[in-house]
Length: 318
Image (cartoon, rainbow, N blue to C red; front, side, top):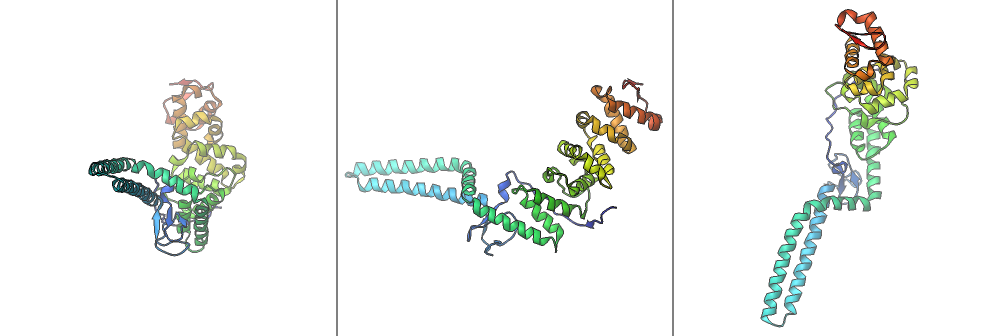
Protein backbone atom coordinates (compact mmCIF):
# COMPACT_ATOMS: atom_id res chain seq x y z
CA UNK A 1 0.00 0.00 0.00
CA UNK A 2 1.41 3.39 -1.07
CA UNK A 3 1.97 5.90 1.67
CA UNK A 4 0.07 9.17 1.47
CA UNK A 5 2.50 11.94 0.67
CA UNK A 6 2.11 15.65 1.38
CA UNK A 7 2.77 18.26 -1.34
CA UNK A 8 5.58 20.54 -0.17
CA UNK A 9 7.88 23.28 -1.42
CA UNK A 10 11.53 22.85 -0.46
CA UNK A 11 14.09 25.61 -0.75
CA UNK A 12 17.08 24.80 -2.98
CA UNK A 13 20.17 23.73 -1.10
CA UNK A 14 23.07 26.16 -1.42
CA UNK A 15 26.36 24.24 -1.25
CA UNK A 16 29.60 25.91 -0.24
CA UNK A 17 33.18 25.20 -1.24
CA UNK A 18 34.09 24.31 2.34
CA UNK A 19 31.67 22.78 4.83
CA UNK A 20 32.64 25.17 7.61
CA UNK A 21 31.60 28.22 5.57
CA UNK A 22 28.01 28.06 6.84
CA UNK A 23 29.05 28.12 10.50
CA UNK A 24 28.44 31.32 12.43
CA UNK A 25 29.52 32.27 15.91
CA UNK A 26 27.92 34.67 18.37
CA UNK A 27 30.22 37.54 19.37
CA UNK A 28 28.37 37.81 22.67
CA UNK A 29 28.34 34.26 24.08
CA UNK A 30 30.57 32.34 21.63
CA UNK A 31 27.79 29.89 20.66
CA UNK A 32 27.99 28.29 17.22
CA UNK A 33 25.13 27.71 14.77
CA UNK A 34 24.82 26.46 11.21
CA UNK A 35 21.21 27.58 10.78
CA UNK A 36 20.06 30.86 9.26
CA UNK A 37 18.65 32.47 12.42
CA UNK A 38 19.04 36.23 12.75
CA UNK A 39 19.71 35.93 16.46
CA UNK A 40 21.82 33.53 18.52
CA UNK A 41 19.90 30.39 19.61
CA UNK A 42 21.74 30.50 22.94
CA UNK A 43 21.60 34.13 24.13
CA UNK A 44 19.16 35.71 21.67
CA UNK A 45 21.53 38.53 20.66
CA UNK A 46 21.76 39.51 16.99
CA UNK A 47 25.54 39.32 16.97
CA UNK A 48 26.17 36.31 14.73
CA UNK A 49 29.26 36.44 12.58
CA UNK A 50 30.35 34.01 9.87
CA UNK A 51 33.35 31.96 10.89
CA UNK A 52 35.34 33.20 7.88
CA UNK A 53 34.69 36.81 8.87
CA UNK A 54 35.68 36.05 12.44
CA UNK A 55 38.91 34.43 11.26
CA UNK A 56 39.59 37.43 9.01
CA UNK A 57 39.06 39.80 11.95
CA UNK A 58 41.44 37.79 14.12
CA UNK A 59 44.13 37.70 11.42
CA UNK A 60 43.81 41.45 10.84
CA UNK A 61 44.01 42.10 14.59
CA UNK A 62 47.10 39.92 14.86
CA UNK A 63 48.73 41.74 11.95
CA UNK A 64 47.79 45.09 13.45
CA UNK A 65 49.47 44.03 16.69
CA UNK A 66 52.61 43.07 14.77
CA UNK A 67 52.68 46.49 13.08
CA UNK A 68 52.18 48.20 16.44
CA UNK A 69 55.12 46.27 17.88
CA UNK A 70 57.23 47.38 14.90
CA UNK A 71 56.22 51.01 15.55
CA UNK A 72 57.12 50.71 19.24
CA UNK A 73 60.50 49.19 18.39
CA UNK A 74 61.11 52.09 16.01
CA UNK A 75 60.16 54.66 18.67
CA UNK A 76 62.39 52.93 21.21
CA UNK A 77 65.29 53.05 18.77
CA UNK A 78 64.69 56.78 18.22
CA UNK A 79 64.50 57.47 21.98
CA UNK A 80 67.75 55.68 22.65
CA UNK A 81 69.58 57.30 19.74
CA UNK A 82 72.35 59.67 20.89
CA UNK A 83 72.85 61.64 17.68
CA UNK A 84 70.68 63.13 14.96
CA UNK A 85 72.23 60.71 12.47
CA UNK A 86 71.24 57.74 14.64
CA UNK A 87 67.71 59.15 14.92
CA UNK A 88 67.48 59.47 11.14
CA UNK A 89 68.77 55.94 10.64
CA UNK A 90 66.30 54.57 13.23
CA UNK A 91 63.36 56.39 11.64
CA UNK A 92 64.35 55.35 8.13
CA UNK A 93 64.96 51.72 8.96
CA UNK A 94 61.86 51.55 11.16
CA UNK A 95 59.60 53.12 8.51
CA UNK A 96 61.03 50.84 5.83
CA UNK A 97 60.54 47.80 8.05
CA UNK A 98 56.94 48.78 8.81
CA UNK A 99 56.17 49.29 5.09
CA UNK A 100 57.80 45.97 4.20
CA UNK A 101 55.89 44.22 7.01
CA UNK A 102 52.60 45.72 5.78
CA UNK A 103 53.27 44.51 2.22
CA UNK A 104 54.14 40.99 3.41
CA UNK A 105 51.04 40.90 5.63
CA UNK A 106 48.81 42.02 2.77
CA UNK A 107 50.15 39.24 0.52
CA UNK A 108 49.66 36.64 3.27
CA UNK A 109 46.23 37.77 4.47
CA UNK A 110 44.14 35.46 2.28
CA UNK A 111 46.37 32.45 3.00
CA UNK A 112 46.26 33.02 6.76
CA UNK A 113 42.46 32.89 7.04
CA UNK A 114 42.09 29.06 6.58
CA UNK A 115 44.79 28.46 9.21
CA UNK A 116 42.98 30.78 11.59
CA UNK A 117 39.67 28.99 10.93
CA UNK A 118 41.30 25.65 11.75
CA UNK A 119 42.73 27.14 14.94
CA UNK A 120 39.31 28.52 15.95
CA UNK A 121 37.61 25.16 15.36
CA UNK A 122 40.32 23.22 17.23
CA UNK A 123 40.05 25.48 20.28
CA UNK A 124 36.24 25.68 20.23
CA UNK A 125 35.27 22.01 19.84
CA UNK A 126 33.08 21.94 22.95
CA UNK A 127 31.20 25.14 22.06
CA UNK A 128 30.80 23.97 18.47
CA UNK A 129 29.27 20.64 19.55
CA UNK A 130 26.96 22.37 22.02
CA UNK A 131 25.79 24.78 19.34
CA UNK A 132 25.13 22.03 16.81
CA UNK A 133 23.25 20.07 19.47
CA UNK A 134 20.95 23.07 19.94
CA UNK A 135 20.46 23.19 16.17
CA UNK A 136 19.52 19.50 16.05
CA UNK A 137 17.07 19.88 18.93
CA UNK A 138 15.46 22.87 17.19
CA UNK A 139 15.11 20.89 13.96
CA UNK A 140 13.57 17.90 15.76
CA UNK A 141 11.11 20.17 17.58
CA UNK A 142 10.09 21.74 14.28
CA UNK A 143 8.83 18.40 12.91
CA UNK A 144 5.48 18.74 14.67
CA UNK A 145 4.70 22.18 13.22
CA UNK A 146 6.59 22.56 9.93
CA UNK A 147 8.00 19.37 8.41
CA UNK A 148 9.52 20.99 5.28
CA UNK A 149 11.37 23.53 7.44
CA UNK A 150 12.51 20.76 9.80
CA UNK A 151 13.96 18.87 6.83
CA UNK A 152 15.71 22.00 5.51
CA UNK A 153 17.23 22.59 8.95
CA UNK A 154 18.46 19.00 9.16
CA UNK A 155 19.87 19.25 5.65
CA UNK A 156 21.99 22.22 6.72
CA UNK A 157 23.14 20.53 9.93
CA UNK A 158 24.07 17.36 8.02
CA UNK A 159 26.76 19.26 6.11
CA UNK A 160 28.94 19.18 9.25
CA UNK A 161 27.29 16.50 11.42
CA UNK A 162 27.77 12.90 10.24
CA UNK A 163 25.04 10.86 11.93
CA UNK A 164 22.92 7.98 10.65
CA UNK A 165 20.24 9.04 13.13
CA UNK A 166 20.08 12.48 11.54
CA UNK A 167 20.01 10.99 8.05
CA UNK A 168 17.20 8.64 9.07
CA UNK A 169 15.15 11.56 10.36
CA UNK A 170 15.64 13.32 7.03
CA UNK A 171 14.57 10.18 5.16
CA UNK A 172 11.42 9.82 7.24
CA UNK A 173 10.45 13.37 6.37
CA UNK A 174 11.28 12.94 2.69
CA UNK A 175 9.19 9.76 2.55
CA UNK A 176 6.20 11.76 3.76
CA UNK A 177 6.63 14.41 1.05
CA UNK A 178 5.29 14.35 -2.48
CA UNK A 179 8.59 14.52 -4.35
CA UNK A 180 9.00 16.09 -7.79
CA UNK A 181 11.73 16.11 -10.42
CA UNK A 182 12.22 19.87 -10.10
CA UNK A 183 13.13 19.61 -6.40
CA UNK A 184 16.71 19.95 -5.22
CA UNK A 185 17.05 16.44 -3.78
CA UNK A 186 19.99 14.51 -2.36
CA UNK A 187 20.61 10.78 -2.29
CA UNK A 188 24.23 9.72 -1.70
CA UNK A 189 24.48 12.28 1.09
CA UNK A 190 21.67 10.45 2.90
CA UNK A 191 22.98 6.92 2.40
CA UNK A 192 23.22 4.92 5.62
CA UNK A 193 25.08 1.65 6.09
CA UNK A 194 22.28 -0.46 7.60
CA UNK A 195 19.06 -1.58 5.97
CA UNK A 196 16.22 0.86 6.61
CA UNK A 197 12.83 0.75 4.93
CA UNK A 198 12.78 4.57 4.65
CA UNK A 199 16.10 4.46 2.80
CA UNK A 200 14.77 1.89 0.33
CA UNK A 201 11.47 3.74 -0.10
CA UNK A 202 13.34 6.96 -0.87
CA UNK A 203 15.69 5.23 -3.32
CA UNK A 204 12.63 3.91 -5.14
CA UNK A 205 11.16 7.42 -5.44
CA UNK A 206 14.46 8.86 -6.65
CA UNK A 207 14.85 6.08 -9.24
CA UNK A 208 11.43 7.05 -10.55
CA UNK A 209 11.72 10.85 -10.65
CA UNK A 210 15.49 11.60 -10.73
CA UNK A 211 17.29 8.52 -12.10
CA UNK A 212 20.48 10.54 -12.60
CA UNK A 213 21.02 10.34 -8.82
CA UNK A 214 21.25 6.53 -8.93
CA UNK A 215 25.00 5.96 -8.86
CA UNK A 216 27.34 3.12 -7.95
CA UNK A 217 27.07 3.52 -4.16
CA UNK A 218 23.28 3.29 -4.40
CA UNK A 219 23.38 0.20 -6.62
CA UNK A 220 25.84 -1.40 -4.22
CA UNK A 221 23.51 -0.63 -1.30
CA UNK A 222 20.46 -2.26 -2.92
CA UNK A 223 22.44 -5.34 -4.01
CA UNK A 224 23.81 -5.77 -0.49
CA UNK A 225 20.31 -5.54 1.01
CA UNK A 226 18.41 -7.21 -1.84
CA UNK A 227 16.91 -10.06 0.27
CA UNK A 228 15.48 -7.59 2.81
CA UNK A 229 14.17 -5.32 0.04
CA UNK A 230 12.37 -8.18 -1.72
CA UNK A 231 10.36 -8.85 1.43
CA UNK A 232 8.83 -5.37 1.23
CA UNK A 233 5.50 -4.95 -0.54
CA UNK A 234 7.12 -2.77 -3.25
CA UNK A 235 10.52 -4.44 -3.06
CA UNK A 236 10.62 -5.89 -6.56
CA UNK A 237 9.22 -2.67 -8.02
CA UNK A 238 11.95 -0.62 -6.32
CA UNK A 239 14.75 -2.95 -7.39
CA UNK A 240 13.47 -2.90 -10.96
CA UNK A 241 13.36 0.90 -10.88
CA UNK A 242 16.97 1.00 -9.67
CA UNK A 243 18.01 -1.42 -12.41
CA UNK A 244 16.27 0.78 -14.98
CA UNK A 245 17.91 3.94 -13.65
CA UNK A 246 21.33 2.23 -13.68
CA UNK A 247 21.04 1.81 -17.45
CA UNK A 248 21.97 5.47 -17.84
CA UNK A 249 25.61 4.29 -17.76
CA UNK A 250 26.96 1.20 -19.50
CA UNK A 251 29.57 0.92 -16.75
CA UNK A 252 26.93 -0.06 -14.19
CA UNK A 253 25.70 -2.89 -16.42
CA UNK A 254 29.28 -4.16 -16.71
CA UNK A 255 29.82 -3.94 -12.95
CA UNK A 256 26.50 -5.50 -11.90
CA UNK A 257 25.41 -7.93 -14.67
CA UNK A 258 23.86 -10.43 -12.23
CA UNK A 259 21.70 -7.70 -10.69
CA UNK A 260 20.59 -6.52 -14.13
CA UNK A 261 19.82 -10.11 -15.14
CA UNK A 262 17.51 -10.65 -12.17
CA UNK A 263 15.31 -7.66 -13.07
CA UNK A 264 15.65 -7.49 -16.88
CA UNK A 265 12.32 -9.32 -17.32
CA UNK A 266 10.50 -6.68 -15.24
CA UNK A 267 11.91 -3.61 -17.00
CA UNK A 268 9.55 -1.39 -19.00
CA UNK A 269 9.91 -1.72 -22.77
CA UNK A 270 12.00 1.45 -23.22
CA UNK A 271 14.41 0.49 -20.44
CA UNK A 272 14.69 -3.10 -21.64
CA UNK A 273 15.57 -2.01 -25.18
CA UNK A 274 18.17 0.32 -23.70
CA UNK A 275 19.70 -2.70 -21.92
CA UNK A 276 19.50 -4.71 -25.14
CA UNK A 277 21.47 -2.14 -27.12
CA UNK A 278 23.98 -1.65 -24.31
CA UNK A 279 24.79 -5.36 -24.43
CA UNK A 280 25.22 -5.11 -28.20
CA UNK A 281 27.75 -2.29 -27.66
CA UNK A 282 29.70 -4.05 -24.89
CA UNK A 283 31.59 -7.00 -26.34
CA UNK A 284 32.52 -8.38 -22.90
CA UNK A 285 28.81 -8.76 -22.06
CA UNK A 286 27.71 -10.70 -25.14
CA UNK A 287 28.73 -14.10 -23.81
CA UNK A 288 27.35 -13.62 -20.29
CA UNK A 289 24.23 -15.12 -18.77
CA UNK A 290 22.77 -11.60 -18.83
CA UNK A 291 23.03 -11.59 -22.63
CA UNK A 292 21.30 -14.98 -22.81
CA UNK A 293 18.48 -13.76 -20.54
CA UNK A 294 18.05 -10.58 -22.56
CA UNK A 295 18.10 -12.58 -25.82
CA UNK A 296 15.34 -14.83 -24.53
CA UNK A 297 13.18 -11.89 -23.40
CA UNK A 298 13.78 -10.02 -26.64
CA UNK A 299 12.93 -13.06 -28.74
CA UNK A 300 9.66 -13.64 -26.89
CA UNK A 301 8.50 -10.03 -26.57
CA UNK A 302 10.26 -7.54 -28.80
CA UNK A 303 11.65 -9.28 -31.89
CA UNK A 304 9.50 -7.18 -34.16
CA UNK A 305 10.83 -3.96 -32.59
CA UNK A 306 14.53 -4.34 -33.41
CA UNK A 307 16.64 -5.05 -36.47
CA UNK A 308 19.31 -7.00 -34.62
CA UNK A 309 19.17 -9.80 -32.10
CA UNK A 310 21.35 -11.79 -29.74
CA UNK A 311 21.70 -15.48 -30.39
CA UNK A 312 21.20 -18.06 -27.68
CA UNK A 313 24.96 -18.35 -27.16
CA UNK A 314 25.30 -14.61 -26.66
CA UNK A 315 26.67 -13.72 -30.14
CA UNK A 316 25.25 -10.72 -32.01
CA UNK A 317 23.62 -11.14 -35.41
CA UNK A 318 21.84 -8.86 -37.90
